[in-house]
Length: 362
Ligand SMILES: Cc1ncc(COP(=O)(O)O)c(C=O)c1O
Image (cartoon, rainbow, N blue to C red; front, top):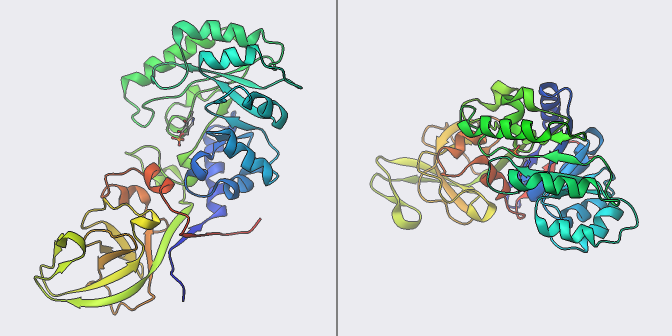
């Protein structure tokens, strides 16, 4: 049998999560965020499953957008960071990529662009996150320029992004809401503000289009509320099998750096998964792993291709027994508490040598 590092991806759960999101934002269209290789789930395969059900797909670069057109994705694709050089404007116009404008240089490029057809544009306003977008003192001028441009479909959209939506009581949220509400006053055109956490926490500010990422993949975007409480189901189950079972005596050390010293005689399983597959090397002793459906603690440092796990509490563990690292039965949010990483890091880190199997071919 070949190496069994697998990511099982559930089409049913992806579409279920989309329904949950739509039920929370019944009056908003959806830009499904599939940048960064579909949050580690696969750019094209995720897009193909969502295309029929969403308004647009959100990507970070024109390369990601073109890869989607190559597999015949036809719906609008939103370049969340806009174009990175002027000649991308032509490609965007021809391919119906919706373009975010967040920077003065992008306004200069569109001024001198010659396009065969008009472009759909979003103005990105920095309402307080302090990352991307026109600051409030400059946003009105940028809006006026885009709104007067003959090559841009009118009215333009306006979007902003929360910096702390996963902390509902963070004071920055209200500041951003106030700034956005003030800026959009009297401006027609579609508006968009909410990522996953904001969809659940700021229902009054969902506007015309919401932009879920993490929640689509079945992970809770709010640390104090579980995915199950929100009705979300994990799309990815990262799994493998036991490749060796060993009896180890009290006082022996396990793995690199001899980080773990066995406190008793123990039975230790070696599993076919490591940081070379994307499993976090930072995982501490005690990180939960399901072996045969039983929660067992990781012991010893994660190596490139293997992890050691204490299977003493498993009745009769055998080579080839199934192992789940996260997903069904073991929420990634819970595993992340032992890894000093968050689910975003962990999902996007899964490597291509892991075999990806989607349920329900399309
Ligand atoms: C502009 C923008 N909107 C929406 C999202 C989706 O965020 P989340 O995955 O938290 O839903 C992101 C993610 O980085 C983003 O940058």
